[in-house]
Figure 1: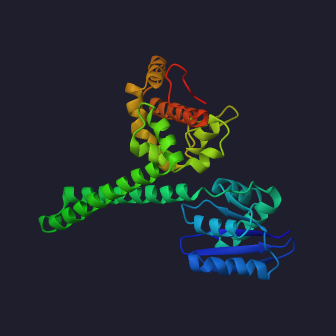
Figure 2: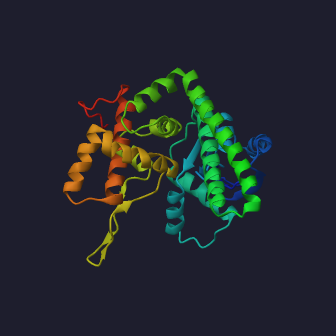
Length: 319
């Protein structure tokens, strides 16, 4: 059966359809208007319902993945590290959009990765709101940094932008709260999350935006790895002894969201406070201690969501 590989960018989708013998390639715009054209192109080549693979590149892949899933295609959303390792195994030298699309198609044909299931409409909306809030917060920080060193002639302009950003940030935060309140499932899960000392309203919203990924994790270890907080050890023979560090092969947004909650949890969460004191007794300090607290917090999050109940320091829900 034919397989389709898609190399995703912000503006375009480079597609490569492989029927087992040869490739057919084409470029489509990464816009809602182009999605029916892509689906029809597949039908015209006898590939209706074929397996499709694409890398998880930012959020640019989501439009095509949802459209193709809704059209009846099994869509696999791949970790770019997997495809990169596959390219290295092939000793591939070509690095173009078309070559990448062909490589993804070969990967899907050989490895038959599991199909992706799109999140619910409620989760999609929450993800969009959370991403927009993150973007505005980053923009506000940039403008605030400019204000610190700005020439007097432009300070008023920067302050005007900052006031506008503050108003929109407040509106978005309220929109996120209202969206969660109006959905019984999200509201219940938020309450469970915020029962964990250290988890704020801001953090709970970000975690809820990743519920589709959580649903694919069967263990707390997988959930930790999804956030890129799993340990990566570099060791080979007797000469290579790299220091262990977090892999960072996961959601940077989730890692950022857990930074300050972990600091608070080390002081006020009974389980993580004891855990942190034990690590300090073993000589752990600084980032090592903080990353360990973030991992422990991910275990607690996994526990309350998995067991469908609030945080219980006596039970020590940790997945």
